[in-house]
Amino acid sequence: MTVNIILLGPPGAGKGTQAARLVEERNMVQLSTGDMLRAARTSGTEMGQRVAEVMDRGELVTDEIVIGLIREKLEEGSEGGFIFDGFPRTLAQADALGDLLKETGQKLDVVIEMRVNDDVLVERIVGRARDAVAAGGTARADDNEESLKIRLMEYYKKTSPLIGYYHAKGNLRPVNGLGEIDEVAAEIGVVLDA
Ligand code: B4P
View 1 (cartoon, rainbow, N blue to C red):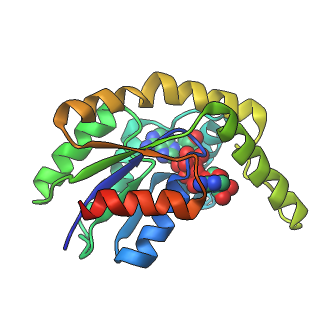
View 2: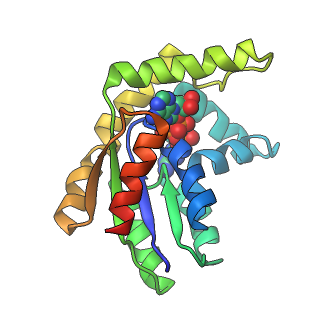
Protein backbone atom coordinates (compact mmCIF):
# COMPACT_ATOMS: atom_id res chain seq x y z
CA MET A 1 0.00 0.00 0.00
CA THR A 2 1.32 3.48 -0.85
CA VAL A 3 0.66 6.22 1.69
CA ASN A 4 2.08 9.70 1.34
CA ILE A 5 2.24 11.66 4.57
CA ILE A 6 3.53 14.95 5.94
CA LEU A 7 5.04 15.23 9.43
CA LEU A 8 4.26 18.78 10.51
CA GLY A 9 5.44 20.39 13.73
CA PRO A 10 7.85 22.83 15.34
CA PRO A 11 11.63 22.26 15.56
CA GLY A 12 12.35 19.39 17.93
CA ALA A 13 8.81 18.01 17.69
CA GLY A 14 10.32 14.67 16.67
CA LYS A 15 9.63 14.72 12.94
CA GLY A 16 13.02 13.24 12.03
CA THR A 17 12.84 10.73 14.89
CA GLN A 18 9.42 9.40 13.86
CA ALA A 19 10.26 9.45 10.15
CA ALA A 20 13.20 7.11 10.81
CA ARG A 21 10.83 4.68 12.58
CA LEU A 22 8.37 4.73 9.69
CA VAL A 23 11.16 3.99 7.19
CA GLU A 24 12.14 0.92 9.20
CA GLU A 25 8.64 -0.35 9.95
CA ARG A 26 6.68 0.54 6.79
CA ASN A 27 9.15 0.59 3.92
CA MET A 28 8.42 4.26 3.31
CA VAL A 29 10.90 6.77 1.86
CA GLN A 30 11.85 9.71 4.09
CA LEU A 31 12.26 13.06 2.36
CA SER A 32 13.83 15.30 5.00
CA THR A 33 14.54 18.76 3.61
CA GLY A 34 16.66 19.41 6.71
CA ASP A 35 18.91 16.42 5.87
CA MET A 36 19.03 17.39 2.18
CA LEU A 37 20.04 20.94 3.09
CA ARG A 38 22.67 19.70 5.56
CA ALA A 39 24.09 17.55 2.72
CA ALA A 40 24.04 20.58 0.39
CA ARG A 41 26.01 22.67 2.89
CA THR A 42 28.88 20.18 2.90
CA SER A 43 29.00 20.07 -0.92
CA GLY A 44 31.39 23.02 -1.12
CA THR A 45 29.20 24.83 -3.68
CA GLU A 46 28.17 28.47 -3.49
CA MET A 47 24.58 27.38 -2.93
CA GLY A 48 25.73 25.17 -0.02
CA GLN A 49 27.52 28.12 1.56
CA ARG A 50 24.40 30.31 1.31
CA VAL A 51 22.23 27.54 2.76
CA ALA A 52 24.61 27.04 5.71
CA GLU A 53 24.47 30.70 6.70
CA VAL A 54 20.67 30.78 6.64
CA MET A 55 20.26 27.50 8.55
CA ASP A 56 22.77 28.42 11.23
CA ARG A 57 20.83 31.60 11.99
CA GLY A 58 17.69 29.48 12.37
CA GLU A 59 15.88 31.00 9.40
CA LEU A 60 14.11 29.19 6.58
CA VAL A 61 15.95 28.54 3.32
CA THR A 62 14.23 29.96 0.18
CA ASP A 63 11.20 28.14 -1.17
CA GLU A 64 12.85 27.88 -4.58
CA ILE A 65 15.82 25.84 -3.32
CA VAL A 66 13.73 23.53 -1.15
CA ILE A 67 11.06 22.87 -3.80
CA GLY A 68 13.81 22.04 -6.31
CA LEU A 69 15.24 19.42 -3.94
CA ILE A 70 11.85 17.77 -3.41
CA ARG A 71 10.98 17.79 -7.13
CA GLU A 72 14.02 15.65 -7.96
CA LYS A 73 13.11 13.03 -5.34
CA LEU A 74 9.40 12.85 -6.14
CA GLU A 75 10.12 11.92 -9.72
CA GLU A 76 11.92 8.78 -8.45
CA GLY A 77 8.66 7.48 -6.85
CA SER A 78 8.32 5.20 -3.79
CA GLU A 79 6.63 1.84 -3.29
CA GLY A 80 5.64 2.30 0.35
CA GLY A 81 5.00 6.03 0.00
CA PHE A 82 6.78 9.23 0.97
CA ILE A 83 7.22 10.79 4.40
CA PHE A 84 7.63 14.53 3.95
CA ASP A 85 9.71 15.39 7.01
CA GLY A 86 9.99 19.13 7.60
CA PHE A 87 8.43 19.96 4.23
CA PRO A 88 6.33 21.94 3.44
CA ARG A 89 7.22 24.77 5.84
CA THR A 90 5.46 27.66 4.03
CA LEU A 91 2.17 28.06 2.17
CA ALA A 92 4.10 28.44 -1.11
CA GLN A 93 5.82 25.09 -0.45
CA ALA A 94 2.45 23.48 0.35
CA ASP A 95 0.97 24.70 -2.95
CA ALA A 96 4.08 23.50 -4.82
CA LEU A 97 3.83 20.06 -3.19
CA GLY A 98 0.19 19.78 -4.26
CA ASP A 99 1.17 20.61 -7.85
CA LEU A 100 4.15 18.23 -7.86
CA LEU A 101 2.07 15.34 -6.54
CA LYS A 102 -0.56 15.96 -9.20
CA GLU A 103 2.07 16.14 -11.96
CA THR A 104 3.57 12.81 -10.87
CA GLY A 105 0.17 11.09 -10.51
CA GLN A 106 0.32 10.87 -6.70
CA LYS A 107 -1.74 12.22 -3.82
CA LEU A 108 -1.33 13.32 -0.24
CA ASP A 109 -3.08 11.03 2.25
CA VAL A 110 -2.47 12.35 5.77
CA VAL A 111 -0.85 15.33 7.49
CA ILE A 112 0.29 14.43 11.00
CA GLU A 113 0.50 17.49 13.22
CA MET A 114 2.92 16.75 16.07
CA ARG A 115 1.94 18.83 19.10
CA VAL A 116 4.64 19.70 21.65
CA ASN A 117 4.95 22.73 24.01
CA ASP A 118 7.75 25.24 23.52
CA ASP A 119 9.49 24.46 26.85
CA VAL A 120 9.78 20.77 25.91
CA LEU A 121 11.12 21.69 22.45
CA VAL A 122 13.84 23.84 24.00
CA GLU A 123 14.73 21.05 26.46
CA ARG A 124 15.05 18.49 23.63
CA ILE A 125 17.17 20.65 21.33
CA VAL A 126 19.48 21.84 24.10
CA GLY A 127 19.69 18.20 25.30
CA ARG A 128 20.68 17.01 21.82
CA ALA A 129 23.44 19.63 21.67
CA ARG A 130 24.68 18.61 25.14
CA ASP A 131 24.66 14.88 24.22
CA ALA A 132 26.60 15.52 21.00
CA VAL A 133 29.35 17.36 22.85
CA ALA A 134 29.42 14.77 25.67
CA ALA A 135 29.93 12.05 23.04
CA GLY A 136 33.03 13.89 21.78
CA GLY A 137 31.35 15.35 18.66
CA THR A 138 30.00 18.79 17.83
CA ALA A 139 26.46 20.05 18.18
CA ARG A 140 24.43 21.01 15.11
CA ALA A 141 25.26 24.67 14.41
CA ASP A 142 21.57 25.64 14.78
CA ASP A 143 21.04 23.69 18.04
CA ASN A 144 21.71 26.64 20.37
CA GLU A 145 19.28 28.83 22.28
CA GLU A 146 19.73 31.89 20.06
CA SER A 147 19.05 30.08 16.74
CA LEU A 148 16.29 28.09 18.35
CA LYS A 149 14.45 31.29 19.30
CA ILE A 150 14.49 32.27 15.61
CA ARG A 151 13.52 28.73 14.48
CA LEU A 152 10.46 28.91 16.74
CA MET A 153 9.53 32.40 15.50
CA GLU A 154 9.86 31.20 11.90
CA TYR A 155 7.66 28.21 12.72
CA TYR A 156 4.84 30.26 14.24
CA LYS A 157 4.97 32.93 11.53
CA LYS A 158 5.48 30.87 8.36
CA THR A 159 4.74 27.19 9.07
CA SER A 160 1.88 27.13 11.59
CA PRO A 161 -0.61 28.57 9.01
CA LEU A 162 -0.31 25.17 7.32
CA ILE A 163 -2.36 23.67 10.17
CA GLY A 164 -5.43 25.63 9.00
CA TYR A 165 -4.55 24.99 5.35
CA TYR A 166 -4.57 21.19 5.74
CA HIS A 167 -7.46 21.22 8.21
CA ALA A 168 -9.55 22.91 5.50
CA LYS A 169 -8.55 20.17 3.05
CA GLY A 170 -9.67 17.53 5.58
CA ASN A 171 -6.42 15.59 5.95
CA LEU A 172 -5.00 16.97 9.21
CA ARG A 173 -4.56 14.51 12.12
CA PRO A 174 -3.16 15.91 15.40
CA VAL A 175 -0.92 13.63 17.48
CA ASN A 176 0.38 14.22 21.02
CA GLY A 177 4.14 14.56 20.56
CA LEU A 178 4.87 14.85 24.28
CA GLY A 179 5.06 11.14 25.14
CA GLU A 180 8.00 8.74 24.91
CA ILE A 181 9.25 8.05 21.35
CA ASP A 182 7.49 4.62 21.33
CA GLU A 183 4.21 6.14 22.52
CA VAL A 184 4.25 8.80 19.80
CA ALA A 185 5.12 6.11 17.21
CA ALA A 186 2.15 4.02 18.38
CA GLU A 187 -0.20 6.98 18.04
CA ILE A 188 1.04 7.69 14.51
CA GLY A 189 0.60 3.99 13.67
CA VAL A 190 -3.06 4.16 14.72
CA VAL A 191 -3.62 7.18 12.46
CA LEU A 192 -1.96 5.49 9.48
CA ASP A 193 -3.88 2.23 9.93
CA ALA A 194 -7.26 3.99 10.26
P1 B4P B 1 15.05 20.06 10.42
O1 B4P B 1 16.23 19.25 10.05
O2 B4P B 1 13.75 19.73 9.77
O3 B4P B 1 14.99 19.91 11.97
P2 B4P B 1 14.02 20.24 13.15
O4 B4P B 1 12.72 20.82 12.71
O5 B4P B 1 14.83 21.13 14.01
O6 B4P B 1 13.82 18.90 13.98
P3 B4P B 1 12.80 17.62 14.12
O7 B4P B 1 11.39 17.98 14.40
O8 B4P B 1 13.07 16.72 12.96
O9 B4P B 1 13.30 17.02 15.49
P4 B4P B 1 14.07 15.67 15.82
O10 B4P B 1 13.30 14.46 15.47
O11 B4P B 1 15.45 15.80 15.22
O12 B4P B 1 15.31 21.63 10.10
C1 B4P B 1 16.53 22.30 10.32
C2 B4P B 1 16.63 23.59 9.49
O13 B4P B 1 16.67 23.28 8.07
C3 B4P B 1 15.50 24.61 9.59
O14 B4P B 1 15.64 25.46 10.71
C4 B4P B 1 15.68 25.39 8.25
O15 B4P B 1 16.73 26.32 8.30
C5 B4P B 1 16.05 24.30 7.27
N1 B4P B 1 14.89 23.71 6.57
C6 B4P B 1 14.47 22.41 6.65
N2 B4P B 1 13.40 22.19 5.89
C7 B4P B 1 13.08 23.39 5.32
C8 B4P B 1 12.04 23.81 4.43
N3 B4P B 1 11.08 22.97 4.02
N4 B4P B 1 12.01 25.12 4.04
C9 B4P B 1 12.97 25.98 4.44
N5 B4P B 1 13.97 25.65 5.29
C10 B4P B 1 14.04 24.36 5.73
O16 B4P B 1 14.16 15.72 17.41
C11 B4P B 1 14.89 16.67 18.14
C12 B4P B 1 15.43 16.06 19.44
O17 B4P B 1 14.36 15.61 20.26
C13 B4P B 1 16.32 14.82 19.21
O18 B4P B 1 17.40 14.89 20.10
C14 B4P B 1 15.42 13.64 19.54
O19 B4P B 1 16.14 12.53 20.01
C15 B4P B 1 14.52 14.22 20.62
N6 B4P B 1 13.18 13.61 20.63
C16 B4P B 1 12.39 13.39 19.56
N7 B4P B 1 11.21 12.84 19.94
C17 B4P B 1 11.27 12.72 21.31
C18 B4P B 1 10.34 12.23 22.31
N8 B4P B 1 9.14 11.75 21.98
N9 B4P B 1 10.73 12.29 23.61
C19 B4P B 1 11.95 12.77 23.95
N10 B4P B 1 12.86 13.25 23.06
C20 B4P B 1 12.52 13.22 21.75
